[in-house]
Image (tube, rainbow, N blue to C red; front, side, top):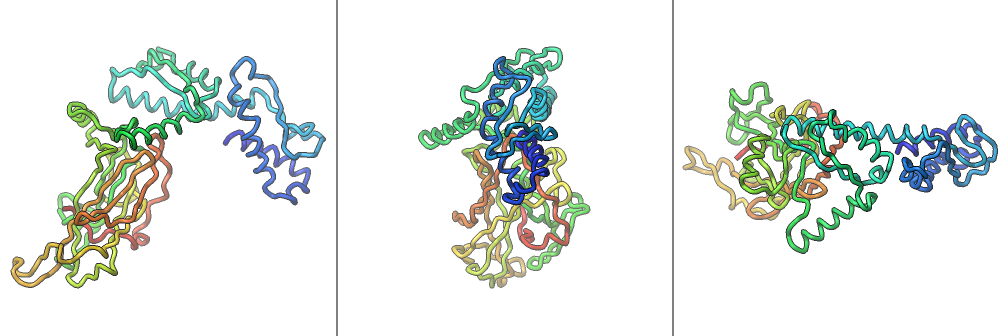
Length: 399
């Protein structure tokens, strides 16, 4: 939080002149800054921008601060920290720049995809959404008809209870879905693409430049670490009427998926006839990419990173239920077994839940990936080849 960082910076300056404070509690500045940000500052934040709440100067008492002398470099005097209107504007303006960037990108994207579409309303919620100053600045910027041609008649409103509006909406959505089976929030927009590693039978026209490997059981050559994409970036995850689904597909080149209808793809896995299912387990590797869907990679590399591994317990499965592949055109013996299974992706309010099913049994441990549908989080760097040994989905291929 910007305000807490400013207060902590100032307290550190005062602390340098009073070593005894740091000796008693090394985290004093950080703890005090957080306490001040949760206390009286909330009033000033909400009131800033109003006639009665905007002052050239105001002060806040520093909790448990006994020194009565002045610290000019830290804007501290008489056990209080002093703030100016300019200080508050800098705090808000820094946050507003991020908001401007998001809204500008969304309006630009909408204009390129649907030039005739107009945005009529913008509803503010959350902590910053309760600020009169923020609403004033957004109104000045986005109700300028000549600047944003697809927001000519934009009206900006503040939610009745902006601090808890989002939480209330999520609770109401879950309650209605539980009671009626119908969710209020039926649409989802993914900030990233998610897929599963597999391997595909080598095709020189399709797998040029990919890592190849000979399968020990069928002796055929496969391209490994190929990505099968389940959820693609900026797809609309919504239950739509048939005509709307077709329209979205034409406009956005992607298959829509629904919260109440899981995405499911079939895979196969080869097994040796002497496999002990009670002591083995299967692993499927989930990957993520932030690239636009038109430029999604076909295999693991710099543009896609491993996110997690789905582990499956095979102890309840039976070898007799799997397809047997023999020698001499399948006439003699058993060369290997083929297990058919599916990876299922469930779209939820708080993220994506991956499951593995085989013979009508869910064999995977629950693996939910948290997704902020409006804004993605950073992921670590992609692993190098020498690091990608454990959890590699070498025995999975497309059905």
